[in-house]
Every structure is written in structure tokens, then in C-alpha cells.
Length: 140
Ligand code: DQA
Image (tube, rainbow, N blue to C red; front, side, top):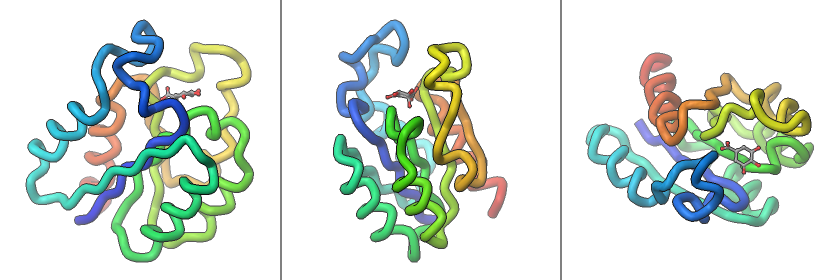
């Protein structure tokens, strides 16, 4: 199984950015642990702060990978283009969020991409990514 993790804007700052909300751990550290935990899964990881680069990555992986775990950051709430990209590819996408967006500001309650994803996981900290891996494994 080949799973791609895609992180959007500001998620390169995990560990430094608003640790009260997103935790004190950097993503690279978490990603290393995730790979160790699932030695039979082929993972790749991509992060960009640029909407078009996220779309290009979805296009690149979206016809050959088995699953994409996408935390689109704030583009979740704004991007019709990301919704269209998810609709345009064959690979199923799970939307994840570290924080429980529904306990936060009103503008975070709506996602432009959920309707194009096979499911949404939010609010479990970095463990949201592992839960998405489990969801893909359960679907196999
Ligand atoms: C986030 C939630 C978004 O509302 C926010 O803009 C982020 C991170 C999360 O993982 O909790 O950048 O996607």
C-alpha cells in the first residue's frame, strides 16, 4: 500500500506554531515514528504553503497511489480549486485536521473539501494522521 501525506500552509511550523492548539512536536519527528509503526506501507510526505503546488502534487500522485491523507490547513475553508483537484483524481483522499475545527472559530466549521473526500478525521492531534492510515487499512 502506498500512502501520501500532504500538508498545506503553515504546517511546516508544527512544533513552533501555536503549540497550545497544534502541540509541541514537529511533523518530521512524528512522520518518522509513523513510518516505523507501519513498515509494510510505502509513505511519502509533501508540504507546501502554496495552493497550486498542493494541487500539482494531488495530480501527480492521484492516479497511482492508494490513498492520500490531506491536511489542507486554512485552504480547507477557502479552496474550490482543491475540491476540484480531489474530484479530478482517482486516488481516495481523507481530510485530516490536528485540531477539532468545530470547537474553534465559526469560519473553520465549513470545509470546501470534505464533500470530495471519502472521510474526515479531526481533533485528535497528530494522531489524526495515524487514524487516517488505519481507515485506509480497514478499507483495503
Ligand atoms: C488545521 C485547521 C485549520 O483551520 C487551520 O487553518 C490549520 C490547521 C488543523 O490541522 O487543525 O492550518 O487544518
